[in-house]
Image (spheres, rainbow, N blue to C red):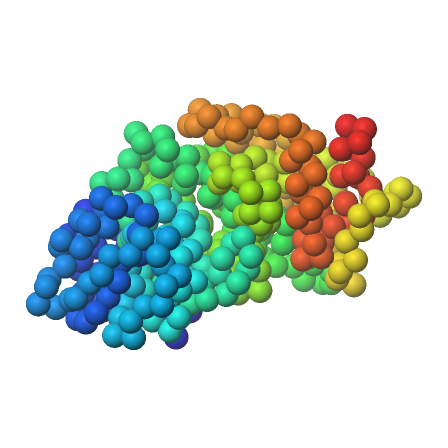
Length: 332
């Protein structure tokens, strides 16, 4: 069974075919899609002597596939990728995304943590990965920010023992450097994919299959454009409320998180990994230069964070239980 997803790039659908031929040489396959143009292009390039294919929209993907189907191609957005993860059963599959997303590197659904299988590979059309396409640049940039934020939340799950998680801190520092300092224009997408892959795989190996931002957006029934906003607020809260010993605060929250691990998060040990306020503002400024971020009410976002917090995010759970988040909603 595959334990990681390979990533390949090439020129157009023809480039995709060479990797498909290596992973699945011949037989019955299904194409599950929400990008009709790209799906039909993939379908038209299949060698009819080698493959028998069926096109399936994501709205139809819950229907049982014929047992003769041995391979699935997900074509399109994250919704197509999630549909294939859920309904592939024991079949092998691959991704042909039309947008940059970090969940291609995980076998889990980021909004729920449900674990499925890894894809054989994910393929990106290099002709579409252009720094002139601000949407694609924003997708890559915001996905690195999402991975960075999840790593920050996990960096607090450490006890006061004579060792630290150097692997995680290395990923955090590398992501922070790209987010704040950038990188060479010719290496931007390569570096973003490297950081996403390294971070997601490392987190999953540690048992972290769910992303806080994806869960929050799912609970709030918001579109994915709000993920960057959730990450911004999570980082801002961490920056502000790890400066003091909030364990001594005496006004508990009305809605307590009761399943916090017995070992308290060592937030001071990880304080050096956090962004500075100026760095967080710089990241937000760069994002605004690439896209129109959704306009939000701060209190509504904090309420959503309160609803999302569980014991699996011990730093935010501790901050919540001291009444800090409720205080921001009621008096902020």
